[in-house]
Length: 497
Image (cartoon, rainbow, N blue to C red; front, side, top):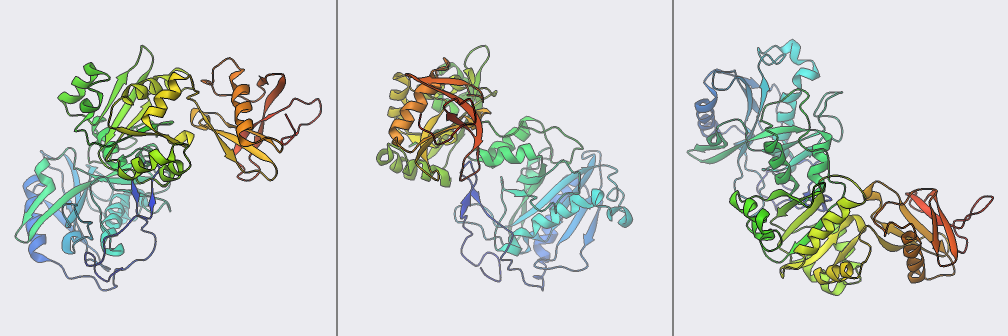
């Protein structure tokens, strides 16, 4: 780390989200000096002149009594006929360059946020009312985010989210749990680019996010862009809305990722062979996200991410895959990802609808691998097709697991469908034999493995009879269903069956 942002090595992410996006932690290693950097009067004056073109010239400057890192002011623009709400914009964040990674445009940024007219303490300005956290939080949100680059030798850009882990950004009872940086929706597009004599300054908006939106963002590849698309589809503007509904119901219950060797321009390029009619619709608007109806009841949502997944789980799942020699190079070299998720939850037809479309797309020559994270499984496109042709179960997969004694296996996939994973243990049987017996017993329900098992269910394998009972994994304490022999009195998790 360095004393001054922009002069040290670019920040690196040692962690990734579930969707494979880089995760930067800004909870330690602050580098901002106590004495703030000097103001940049030329850049500031040009930025203010740019803002007044769109927001009017009636504004108030809020200046900090004590500043650290940067001398941060806030410009509070009053409502106008063209902009009938208050707009708050930072001034001073761009005094210092951000430590932007190579290849990313722009290292000077200011942030903005709109609030409704007559917001207590802000319209009109009233220091006493602003002492109330329920009134002050939009100002605090902007100030805290604006200081991230200078405090942590880091950067902010389009699609970045900040999680309110310590309940510091929003007041108690707030419907929000984080925020995302994006375009100032509802304002003229030209507002985003402030040209100054010493270079361009980008002006981006801060959108408070609900817990469902935050969960969605970290669950899908390219989650920042995906969430911004959903916010814009829901007509969410860069103005705080009281009790606005979430733009997404939450993260998808599960997903399948197709790792591609090429970089399609839009979903039309992906579906051109499999679903040509839908491909034409996606191609017309160059959509990166869309829904494909499968029948009268089920539909599949697709999202194209032009980039490489960096999720640690992907690497782990690939390394433990039976096709590891083929899938490891795909993980290392893939250039884009198509994510498929069911539009509705369920353990029957929604599963089959997604898998049917995956099978159609897997015939493409540029699909290098198929990753099913809820099953902890990575396979080649060819092997996936062979599995389906051979009537392999697509709801779950069975993996070895550790227990205090003996051999044990556990399913992966049922938890994503709203159930519990099933564990089976026997000290005298190999993992291979345990897997065969567990799969055969689950198939005896008559649901062909497409339905989630439940506690109390009776199973059968050849001449052996079993039942499923609620239990927990002896090491991880994960809630599971244990497959055991029925007993009149008690039961034994590790008894022979």
